[in-house]
Length: 515
Image (tube, rainbow, N blue to C red; front, side):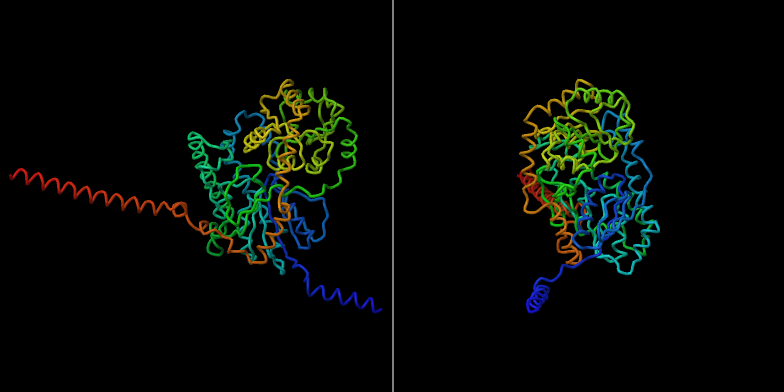
């Protein structure tokens, strides 16, 4: 009995010495039409629930995993990937396509957030008397910033890729255009004068894109949070406390960050892989020569690729000793080889973590590149759209990818690419060396994100992290108004000296004439 009493006393004392961590109520809203964007934020939300916080996550995609303290609200959006995939495969210039698709993409990002905020499920959540301590959103959910004002809580934004103008603008993060290559141009260090000239053009394009982006998002915001009753759209954008970037300096150009912008590259990567579905596990572990994983991401349907491209890929796969597991959106593939397994959804990170995976054939999304880098799997890259050509160009330069344009896929070119990466050890050696750099951190990406999330809540939005330049316009932030004044003063002084010099010269001429 005395022993039991001592145990109880020790337990009681431990509660005083080591008080229980606070449990917060956290609301997540991400309405991105790209599922890969939501996956990054969802990983953080689920981990916060595992650590004892009460989490509600609203997105267009269902979540099969059941986690205590984690409530998932699914608000479906209209499908768009089929038409999008067809446009991508038919286009031969991804940069020009990016410009053409801009209005469509911006409108597509505004429609889901409108539907989500109007939904009875979300309105019911916002009226819960317990309230929320924090709002976490994605980069395509600006209209939801008004929710944080409505709830009286700070906002954190999760960006699924590297910093760009529309994200930098949230916290005033600077972009030195002389040293930071534009993510769409594929420039590398050191930049020549010509590169820096092109980079200036890319910077201006980003600023125009940001302006148009905010135009569409402002319309959505004001529809739900009308002026007069709520702060303006520009005001709530400036109230963002923190931005997480799913990026790491080993994957891109080292650059400066303000305190309110934190790199958490590989946020969606698990410290310990989850068990694979049994049929997938058996397929991978039964492959004596290893497995090739093929996925074009969450926004592209492989079944929509041109017949000649599909035929070239299948002919190559028939000649290989390896097994292939392919993310394919239907269960119907004409002339499917016996060594190919089709699945409409696959746990990408868990598959890449398996030691029997020898090669990853992918489209160049940053999420997939990070996962392949973390697990040391070389790539064959087939870039399709947006920043994918630039992402893969950098990886190819680092020596762990073979890049092939989708318009150039033939039996010869695709077979050469696959066999080159499978049988040339330099690709695996390079990725394993770089994997060590990517993994070498004081704490994991998830631990970093959780710490700073709780930090923002503990310190009531952490306003002391805010960079003063975030509240200045472009001219003030770059001291262009000061430079303009100095230029004006210099001109006035020059004119005064010029006038004085002419006056002296004129008097001298008059004096000489009199003599």
